[in-house]
Length: 438
Image (cartoon, rainbow, N blue to C red; front, side, top):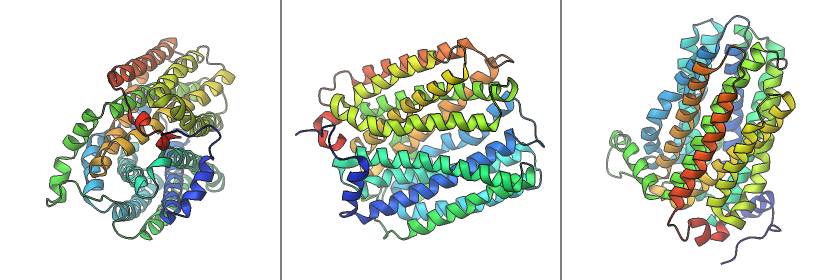
């Protein structure tokens, strides 16, 4: 079989062509975009309500603790909850998870408005995050049901890129609403309520899918209760990852990047807030925009790279580029930080796209939701662990050459793990079905 050449149609062209055969593709994309806007609004509103709220004070350890409360419990429970994506109708999961998410965002807004302690706000946000990850895992697991396998990489690139763009749109909406409502507790709460509207729109769009249209075709743990399915979810998901070393390699690369990204995040927060690297929230927005720009580039380069050199070598190239970009942060000059952020955004998105395709092509639909939840656990646990390490070791001025060097070493470890896991695989899935990856 031949793979697509670089002159093949763009992801947008493939998307428009695929719409004629699968109208559900456009509907699923609409759910993805509205869900990502919801995430962007909520995350930015919560972040600014805690970190840049004049009525609250936050130090690096408090930031690390906040992320831990927000992400770790779901990371532990996610693989179990992911079993429900393979046990229940995924269309129903997308509908009800978005409705629940809307209600929970409203509750968090109330806690912010009333000046509740930060721990209370974060616990509420934790539950919202769990619902959000449920939605995102369900969308990824559902994609193979609305598009043919030969264009999965292109569609993953398009969905992920547009989704990242919608996160930025959501953050932009938050900036605009903060200018209208103010940055105190009441204004932060009113800004957060925008997420309620977006989540309800996503639920309405998902409701338009026919029942069972998004799988699972053969439910995992069929004939047993949902409680039983949840109890075996981690075992089934972990077993599937262990049986597919290509998926394990992608998760190793994703984990390495998230460790680096977590350390860099806290380091830059300390610099921006306490060392005058820039002007506060605006500079965070600039760095986030640079990271998003790198992710956009990855949407174009990843399919081309995978088609030419395969998934393994694409991951290895990303890890190598990550080492260089991480070392470029030494000195922490503003321009260097922006460039490095863009390159690291490309690195992270490349690893993520390779991971998504590995799980969509190499994992059967019966346990795909559980494997995506395992990925979420790796994603979040690595991020929180890195932020915690940074919070405990970072100097008062926020400058740490040791953390930067350690990040470069982590990328090397991600590459070595990929090589080890691919060893002995003569015909990896990207080589056995090249048309799926062009």
